[in-house]
Structure formats: structure tokens, C-alpha cells
Length: 308
Image 1 (tube, rainbow, N blue to C red):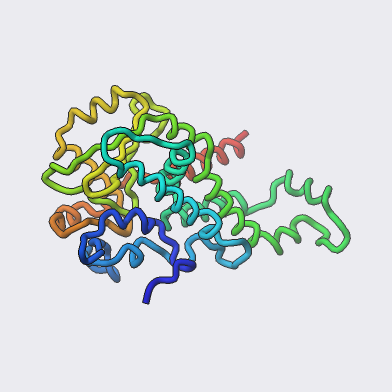
Image 2 (cartoon, helix red, strand yellow):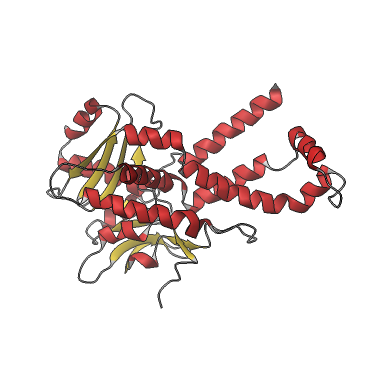
């Protein structure tokens, strides 16, 4: 029985995983830890993996699902944008919509993982635990007959619902961040064809490889597109030149290592030829995610405000 797309929210989108399908079986290899056991591989269809039920819904149903209103359109537009990468020849002809759609998709892949959603929930909890003086003042100004007498009473009754709605609003706002999106749009976009390499590209539930900041001089973003195509975005052409100095095998090895080490739940492949590599490196990275770095920054800001 097929999964219900309205309930199974794919943090690794189906259209992206379809690029790793091995015909004629129309399946790919999914590596995962099953029931606290060892990492193992299995053949599965793209719809049967990379999802969590109700991931982009509020727990209490207090706000509309973000899946239908935002995530599905993001993936739909990104799927159209990906077709540009599949065109023959080296020229990438983008419309403005396609370019923005792909930047938004990259941002989404940095923030839509279940671990990121859990981190965001804690982030919202930390910000919404107590009433601020500003919130109390606003309540007094807006108070009407029939409302609780104090802001504290109102907050106790409504905090959970507001917090849940805020969690989804924050996620959408961060993925759709105009400032970060414009930085990605302004980079030079390229595709490396690694068809002649010894190994094929792998992907995972954290497939984006990038520098710590997009503002640094040699900033880059890399992400496997298919087993033989690699997306590369750079700020400077000098950075691209350095990447091109690598042999195909070196480039594939470096990308595969980072993609597999960054994995949290799943690694994906088009065949079983790299079983040992995946099992040896799955989830070994201790690098903080984009969301974790954001949470750390906000915690520092809160401490600074408290000390002021």
C-alpha cells in the first residue's frame, strides 16, 4: 500500500531521491540503523524512505500544516529547477524563478530534517518560556472585556498554541530567508560530471556540503544531484579552480565522505558497491548543523541581554 503523502512528510524529497533509482527495479539502496541494531542496506522506493509522519504539522493541530502550504510547493518548484542541471552541455540557463527555487531548496535541505525540527522546538521553547515586559504592555493595551484579567492568565491558557504556530512560522521564515537566498543566488553555479570516476556519488538526509559561512572569501556549496552529477556553487571563480584541480576520484571521495559522515538517519546509493564505505563512515561527523549554530547564537544573544 503506498504511503499517504498528506501524512508522510519527506525531509529528503521524493523527486531528489528518484535520481538514485536503479532501473528496471525502480528502487534505490537505503542505509539506516534499524531498531537500534547495526547499519544495514535495503532496496526501497523513493516514497518509502526519507520521511516522518506529520513532521511539518503542529502537535496539537492549532495551525495549518506547513507540508501542503509550503514544503510541497518548494519541492515542486525545485524539481522543475533541477531539470536545468539535466540539460545536455555545460550551459545552465536559469529563469529568475528557477534560480530562487533552487536556492530555497538548498536552504530547506539545511533545516527541514527531523533533528532540526526538534532543535527548533527547543529554540522556540527557550524564547517563549516567559512573558516579556513588552508582551505585558501589549496585553494591557489590547485588553477587552471577557479576556483574562492579566497577561499571565492569558499566557497560561494560550502559550502552547502560540508556541506551536511560531515553530512552523520560524521554519518557513528561515527557509525563505531573503538575505541568505540572495547570497546563494549571487554565487556562480556549476555542475561537475563525475561519470568517469571509480565510484558513484552517494547522498543522504544531510546532502549539502558547504563552508561554515557564505560570507567567507572561499565560500562554496556542493550537493550531489545524481550518482554522476555534482552541484557546485562558489563566491569566487578562484575557489572553483581549486576544486577543479582535484581528480574526479578525489572529488567524489571527498564529497561522499562528508555526505555520509553528516548523515543522521539515512544514506542513499544507486547500488551496493560502497557498502563497506557507508558502514565505516555513517554519521561520524560531529559538525553542528545550521540549526544548531543558530540555536547557539540565539543562546549567546539571550545571555548578553540578561547581563546588560
